[in-house]
Structures are given as C-alpha cells and as structure tokens.
Image (cartoon, rainbow, N blue to C red; front, side, top):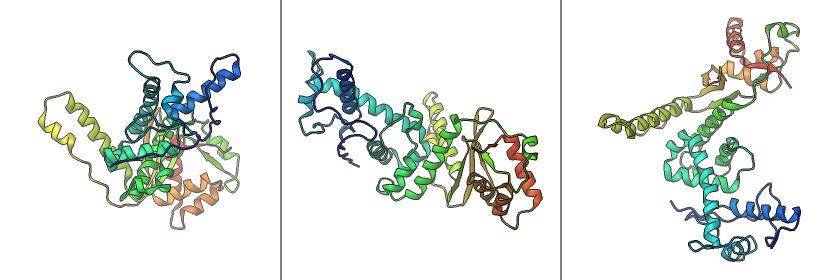
Length: 315
C-alpha cells in the first residue's frame, strides 16, 4: 500500500509560522518567532518516503528555507540536518500509537496499520504535553475516514475505543470514593452518583476484550521465543489471532489497586451504569436497567461496584 499525505496549510492549535526565520535573536519576540518556525518545520507530516516535505507553506523549496536558519556541515546539508529531527519527532509519535494499539495493529496488519496511523497523525497531530493523549481521537478518525480500515472498519472502531479506554483507566484521575454513610444521607429519588474518571463503559458488537487479550498473549509468546531456541514456541508465536465472531459485549474498563482490569457486565447492569453517567438519579438508573431486573440483582451489582470503588461524588 502506498500512501501520500498532503501537506496541510498550518497546524491546528499553532499560530501561523513567520514567513522567514529571524536573522538574529535581538529580543524575545525574535526567539518566539524562531521557536514557532522550528515547531512548524518539525511537525509537518513526512512524505510517503519518510522525508521532509520538499516545499514550505508558501511554496518555496524547503532546502532554501532550511538554509536560512540551519548551518550545513561537511556531511549534511541544512535540509538533511532538519530532516533528522523531523523524522525523530514523527517516528516517536508513530511508535507510541504502535505500542498503544496491539489489537488494532493485529487486525489490520502492519502495512495497513502504518498507513492508518500516518493519516491519523496528519489530521490530528499531537497537541498535548504528554504522549499519553496521542490516540485519544483515533476511534473518531476511523469513523470519519473508514477508507483506512476497510473492510473491517466497524471492528477496528470497536477495538480502538477499547484500547483507548485502557489508556484512560491506566492513569486518569481517581476521585474520593463515596461511602455508604454518605449514600444514606440522600434518598434514592434524589441521589445522583458519579463514576470514577478512569472508568469507561464500552459496548461492542464483538468480544474485543478476548481478542486483545489473545493478541497480547501472542506478543508475549513472540518475545519469549525471540530469546529461546524453541521451534514449537516460535511457530505458535507467529500464528495469527483469528478475528472475533460477533457477540454483543458490555465492558467496564477500570483499575483496582493500581492494576488495569476490564470487567464484563450484563446488559441491564450496563444500562444502569450508563444512566448514572448521564445524570439520572439512582431510582431512574434502576428503572433503566429494565422491568425484568430483580432487586436482589441490583443489590449484588451495587455491592460489587461499591467494593471496586467505582462511585464518587458527581461534579
């Protein structure tokens, strides 16, 4: 697969670059202009051949522009020196999405996944101080531009949502857990509960949890096989994980005692939790679970969720 990424005019969230880099740094304004110029030069998407874009935003040759503020040496031109840093920036971003998306990568294969990530980062470049947020809009992008994941777009979208939920669960904020005594102070008809910020509710048409877990086990086996002369292990590690069959699955992705978990719940329980996140009172949330749900079921669910620390005060 060959992919060509068009250079975009400007970058979302960044001020436009100055037409020319300042010739000397006489004041703070000159320094800011140079920093802004350098930032734009580094974050512009690479070409399909992983090279610096040949033209600057205004159409001038990039080699000419780079020479204005980067000195060549006896081995590299100004363009080549800038290209080293641009590649380092982009390869680091691509590697981060690669590491955070084992399931999506296994589904699409290396070539299609690489094309998807490059197109995604060109449209939604990093705008956060932390690489943790890099894949936050990957599921959204898959839905917006399904051509990159055909013919498995719906499954790819579900896996991307699930894998991002794991990132959220890993290090998002934990608020003080609400206590039984606090619950007793408010009648159920008025009680509104918040769910921990690190908790995500994921409804999928496939058992994406089983699929991603199988992929991770295969990756771990590959790592072991690479360090051992074991033909059986090596053969098993190369075996492709089959795509999951359709089966409606309801998941709560969360953490407990600093460890990541994903817990399956029944559809009525999922509806109840969803209603709570939408601001329903406890009575309304129980009603959303459905008329067939018994009081004993609700008590069991609630006891488990309280034990896991899922509830906090609603902001």
